[in-house]
Amino acid sequence: MNTTQLDIECKYCHKIYTVKKVGITDYQNWKNGQGFIQDLLPYLSAANRELIISNTCDSCWKEMWSESEINIDE
Image (cartoon, rainbow, N blue to C red):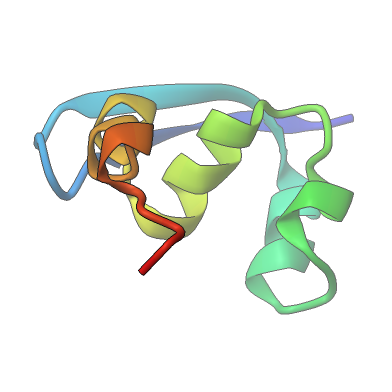
């Protein structure tokens, strides 16, 4: 499999993260709408897939969606 790395800036903290060993064909297929990212790039962590999708790093994602802020009774 031909792979590449993606350097992605988190849109919240502005840190640059590198996602390594991304299958070029898998990534292109996802970009072209040929499937869900979790199906086309299952070998990446959920955090790395989210970074690719939304440019949001895992730390910022967890800060935004911490359990302490979720109130299911409302």
